[in-house]
Image (cartoon, rainbow, N blue to C red):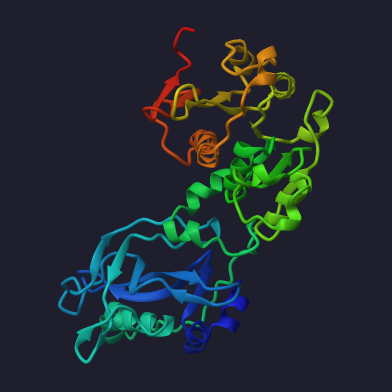
Length: 401
């Protein structure tokens, strides 16, 4: 990452040539060896952290005029806090490789042109040198401190599952939370309306591996409840082929097979740490449940039933979590259909894209709560959402059936 960024961005290269201790962490620029004074005018050393916004695979720009700082508030020669450094306390978890940089605060000092503040600095070089003058000026004058150590920290190899820089995670400052998925191998069983949206959400989640399965074909009606662009040549192909092509340029660790999962598919799920079941046939669901429970793989089953009796469409969306420990017990509650009713062959199967997406979102949000990415105060294992009032009700482990 170091050589790539420095060679393609002149302002970053100028920082290196100037002698700054330049390093990178995901989409963050780190400048170590920044001297500053405390209230006793003692010499201390900190680090400047600035967010990078990727433009393409090589170029980056600054996000705004602000920086983060690893250190206490710097003081002037008079022992008073340096003024005109807005911001406040701030925390940001960096990678293990940069654990020596502990962000404590943010600073905001807009550049000025002809005495008037403007929105951004011209580039990273102007930004860093400007903040250096403010933060380190007193330390350089009093202690002859040298910020130009030419120490570089090239960082560990980027092992991201994504094929381009994940600027969303660093921009939102949630890298520590995203790491909670790094050991997950997720199975997605069924790529119909809800399953296709579930796959779309999971592809953009930094799980280590995704294995998806569906042997059905992709027709025109599928395009109305499927994420992404429709190409004419996709019609009549298998869903597995289409979705594999759509997401090939997005991430590594993605396998999509044209296959139905049944009791004979145990090897396909070896090593899976979590599964999503997005199928609408009861007998198929029952066989998949038995397989997952026998392999002690926790999973979420999602489904919905829509109807139109006298006018507008109504119905329920469901997401049910089957833990590795209690999967069989929850299965016995018959919260999901595990048989094919005779009248189903005459039923109108209403599927609407936004409801498929919402159903998939309920399932993925529950998964992320289980991993500690989202806060989970109540921990329901069974979620129901009715369209008519948009209320979600839950079922809890300690409730009687």
